[in-house]
Image (cartoon, rainbow, N blue to C red; front, side, top):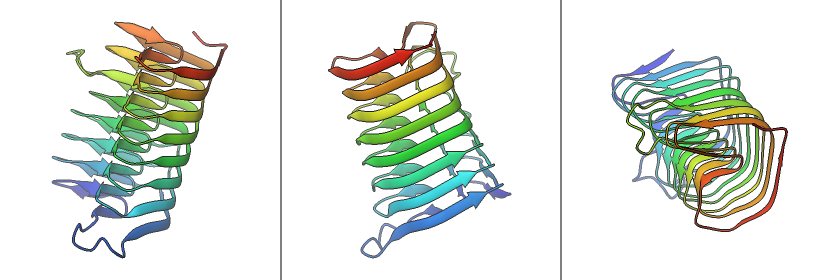
Length: 232
């Protein structure tokens, strides 16, 4: 097991912000690990990543728990891009904050993503891929994933099959055979969304105490090329 009194991660806790010119994370796998961050972030690969792009990374058969901050399958707070990343058969839990199957708080683009047979639970924005995302999320497969926000306050308790709250575009995403439960807003793809394009929702149960949508709980923006089937 990997235990940090602060943050904890399967590969590196924090990518050094002073060594950014040559840093990257490529072709890494974490399997069968228990990762616990007692008072800060917990993540399968890296907790905080300032500029190291992540390519071809997988976390499987693992348990990731953050007692007092964000929990993420691959990267916690990340300002770099991620491509070809996968989380399989993993339990991701934040006791106080956001959680994401790939990242709790991605600031840049995520492409070519797979999350399957995984449980993601948080107290705030929680998603099968991202908790709250500022970057584009494209080419996504979410299969047999349970996403839950559990805070009793209701505020910022957004849940989505892809993202709890997506502040940028989500495109070419499929969510199937999954359950999404949010206190405030919940959607098959996102609790709250900016722009959604090319979304498929197949056999997904969506539940919320406030507003629930087959695709999105609330959005002020365009939704195009959407297919919802066999969902409740």
